[in-house]
Length: 185
Image (cartoon, rainbow, N blue to C red; front, side, top):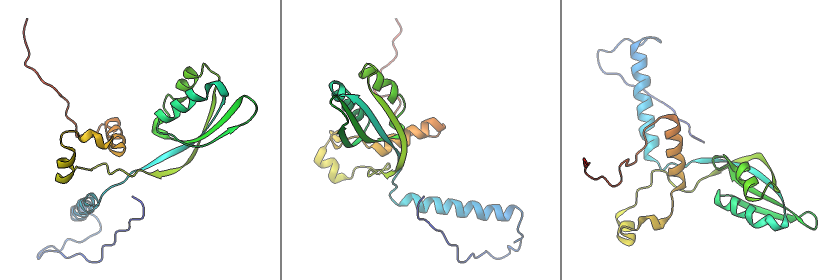
């Protein structure tokens, strides 16, 4: 959470509750109730994710520039600059999402036959525009019908689900896509 402050101005207790010491089960109950209330209030607001980005600098000979841009575009890179260093070398500068950087160096070496060299430095955090909890409204469903995939992939939902799977948390997904009866042969 960025830029969120929560102030509790007043707490009122029911009649008969007088156990208000700093320790004990009553304090834990208050903390639990406040925690649940804050969580529900935050979940009602549309959420956005911030994604860490690397500053990716790739030096490559000119015959292999196409392979480098293909690898960068496949990994959701934003190419910011392409400069010719010498007569046959390019320097490509881009922003690479950290989650897309796993296996990046090996793929770059494979596609360019080892002729490209890259350097990754942490740059900044960027807000992802998609809402990970987006559910299409009736108007959108009427417009697109069953072809809801034409809206594109919800990148924020994909990232959130990958993080939840890695941490062992619940992911809303349908495990069985096309079930059939089991046949014994």
